[in-house]
Length: 104
Image (cartoon, rainbow, N blue to C red; front, side):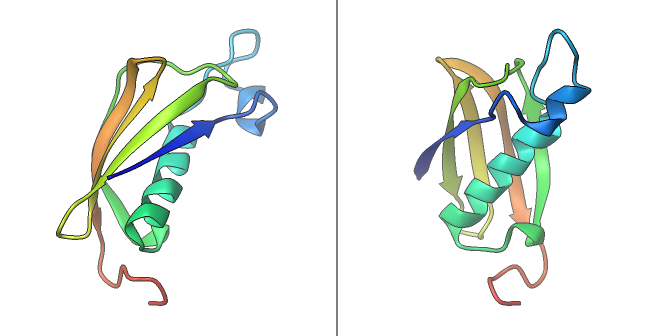
């Protein structure tokens, strides 16, 4: 089990079009941050991961501090939960694809 904090800065380029005047963090930006953190925590290359399930539960605003809880599974995949101030933001699972260890 690993925990880490994530903050998407207000000047992130994704906010230019998502949505002007009322910016929210796009799901793809959240997933990219989650994937990088899981790869580091579980010791495998992020490009060798496949998201098997993801559920978005609430929006995230620029600059909000997120807490990511990661559980690496015995099969080499992972489960995650993303929270912001106690509210569920997203959760999901990922699996490793073929050749998933670092250096392959």
